[in-house]
Length: 485
Image 1 (cartoon, helix red, strand yellow):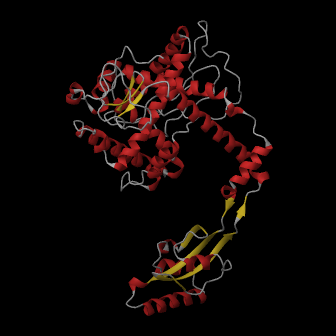
Image 2 (cartoon, one colour):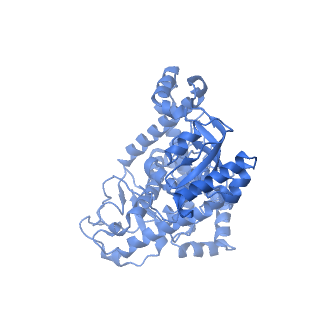
Image 3 (cartoon, helix red, strand yellow):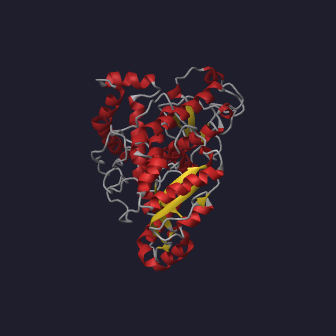
């Protein structure tokens, strides 16, 4: 797991990486039937840069029929791309990250899996141009992988304070860059990836996996759609890239012309052509996985029996434990010469409140508690969540509005007053039916997505830096990017 990505990072960011490691990406591609439409997801960053994340299982489509205008014959109409937010995350393409796959290492006649490739071992690549994975005849570079960080952050935005998003993202980027640097420093070792510290390894593996899935889906699209129909798709997406995404890239790189942008991108291991390809792969992959899952079993009707069975199997998810809001005045043992002295001080404060003094004012003036300066107010607390059993018992037995006796914990004396308490409840099946139905659909989609990706993974060779340590991929051949079966 990724709980130690960075000591200084907030738990929310650790949850970001942990979530991705356990569940993969469940992004929701657009549901247009008549066009390849970029998803409006930019990770919440102000410059509107497009988020290049793995497509993931789509949201439940409203229809289950095959799109009538999807390219399926030489006469297929040109695909129209609607206006969308600009492309590419706020990143420094000189940084990057990888992921893991269980697929057998990629092999071709051009390199021997038992022989290291001296030319590549000795090459001095800029960080963003380092090959981290190969899918068919396409490659995943560090500059590609870093884009997935925005998606990881976006998935946990509800758990990250808005004013900390940029800081948290920067911390993850720093860790990814450090992990890639560790790999490059050990590039001449028998197993270069072994040089990556464990806490960074999992994060890099997750980000590589995202890029691999995008490329697998895109290659499946190219293999199954008639070649005569491809130009219409590519032309439409390319035109949209030039009109919108290229402008965002120029703004990000602070350049005034496409020529200056090309130079800036190449200095970071990328290029306009590569950015355009990556954009196309993302958009087309989203639409292709949407179409494929529409035709599968994921769209079967959710029956009443299905919902009832799911509800019974997930009863704990619908239980809400008792909780309470309360106030506290506390006196720490450590701040008094003896425990008896601390008790006397606590009793004196309690007597002040009993004599008519304001509880919050006494807390502000004298409490040692962490919320003392705020009047001792404690927000909603779930039963059983406190480390002190004595406090927990008092909070959930004391009548609201009544002062407690002096409660002793391991470190302090306390007087509390319950402001409001709610008993444990369970959402009924009747009230939960809508949520249950959506959960079943989501599970089906995730299962169908996994099965589809697992199927096409067997049809295309995949290699990453975490596979065969003796094998190094050859340089990408731009004229032979996509494999054919």
